[in-house]
Amino acid sequence: MNLSKLLLCSGLAFSCLTAWGIDVLEFNCKRSEKGYTEEYEMKMILASGAQKAKVFLDGRDLDHSDVFGAQVVKSITIARPNILIAIEANFEPEEIMGVSYPAGNVLTNITLDPVTGKYIKVEKIQGGILGATIGNGTHISEETCLPSKMPYKSK
Image 1: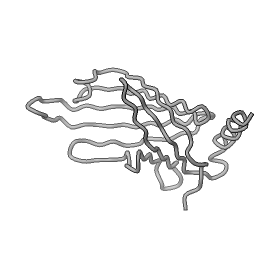
Image 2: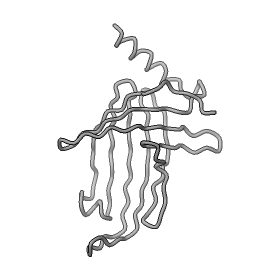
Image 3: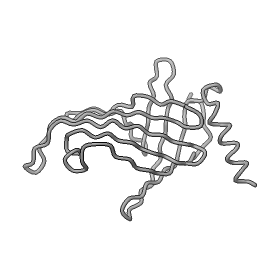
């Protein structure tokens, strides 16, 4: 009974985020692959006015640029019951341990259902060190992300 109430309340909370003026969402996430499990915190700040959408993993801003390339959170969209996140990364050509890699890019589309915790990441990799090591094309992975706090309004 408590689980069904929790799911209902979570569904109601996440279904009306923009109507309530909510702009910050926080999750505890877990990814497992090949016997290795990693837990991390994810914080999302929805776009509003001049503020662009932001995603932070363990406090690290995913919008990042340096001499090796750039990564940008393109959008966070509330599409009931899901949260959709689009991220784009571009990498400059590089040489590592005598091996040259061409420029590359990764387009990431994430679908997160905050009620069930189902997090599906679809990455389209083209070129670069990732294309050479993981392979060019579409790669799909699944994780779990559950709300760690009720959504709230920043400042």
